[in-house]
Image (cartoon, rainbow, N blue to C red; front, side, top):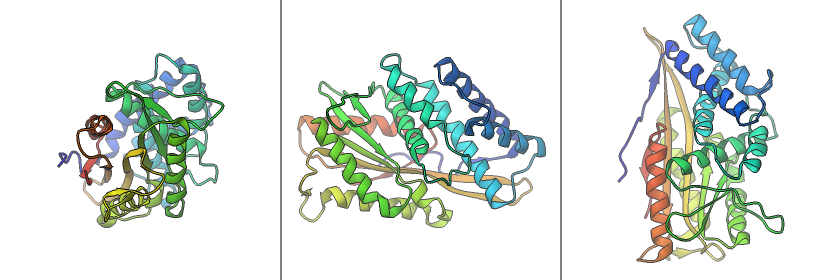
Length: 302
């Protein structure tokens, strides 16, 4: 079973100086990568929000302002990781997608979810690079593409990332991810960021809800009773659900904010086959990289 790491990271208002520094550094890296970050961009708005917390030495008290603060922290974490692992080849498509990823509002309530999907996609891309899986973005105009191609051993495999806004969208997202892998002719992994689906969950039930959604995703792809893939999904050898969330203010003194992040992956390959070893390699290397970002690893079925 994976090691539990940073289950309840707790922060003080004064620690936002370092968080703001990471976000400022990420903005500088984006601009060096030829991704302009306008003044009204949500990353720069996040800097202002973090600065207000530092100046007041207290966390926001209204629901909307606290949501913006939480999103500002997550932006700092995600984009610091993304910009620390920018590709050295195939930069054009990455640049185009990152220009889209920085759009959107800090409240993140709008219907246009493309910026947030790209944020999740490129955070996973950063974790793949941290895991030395050397992801590259395929660009084929004649077929559907997965988000990334990786080569854990000697062959290519696909990785597709989805971020549904609501639980009712999970099935369609998983089915689309599997279709993208199949269209490109690759076996591979489907990773689903379920953060938006569990955003309102209290800390007491947060892990349970992430586990439940992971089981839902597994059930779309795999018949557990028969120990076999469901028809049409035999090329998906790994599924994972992960989420940031369950932020809670703990009264002081001092007042602190505590959070939980979870990652749970399931392998659908058994025996000494090439695809099993590839899935196992991706799984294990990703877990190490993601644990380093403050996520608790939950053991899935293997």
